[in-house]
Length: 247
Image (tube, one colour):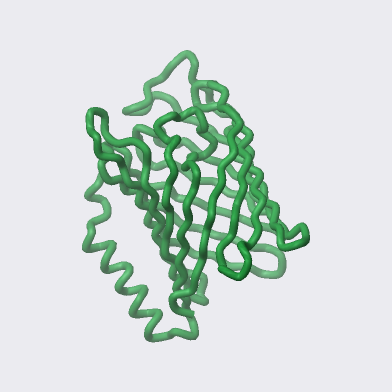
């Protein structure tokens, strides 16, 4: 599946986006982000000792006034293929279309996950979100059997955030999973569940002076994994910085 997105295709996509931005700068923008995180915890799985290390994460986003966008996000990982001393790198390539009217917003797209130094991890995940005011409901549908999920696994989310005064922003993210069984890499098990509460993240953020960076404290209330194993509660600290490249 690693051949599903060729390097040439990726380069071409970003070249087209860059050309479009240069041709119509008033109609498009290019932004970037980078952050340092005390841990990279994926969708509430806190009981993963291989991910106890810090992570550097960042990405680029190109968006047009029409609602179309493309982007990239990446992170180092604390593990790699079994028997290898080389750690993996996650690369997420995504594209979609979104918009808003009054207090209603929507977003339709897909993410392709491409992993370096990890075998049978790459997959496509279409997604859809609908928001009203500060709250957003969405889902992601896994379209391929991989080591981290089965075809048909669906990750449901409910997110909300808002300013609470003195420059602080408080946000919450609730995650819930519906699981499919008998995948190529995750076989059926008597302990496997069909669905379950995955996590609740509560994040408090505040700007760091006039640097443009933010300090973020996230408390993760752990749920259960696909085999019903309880996940620990965990605190994650991060410093993030967002910036404009072309506006």
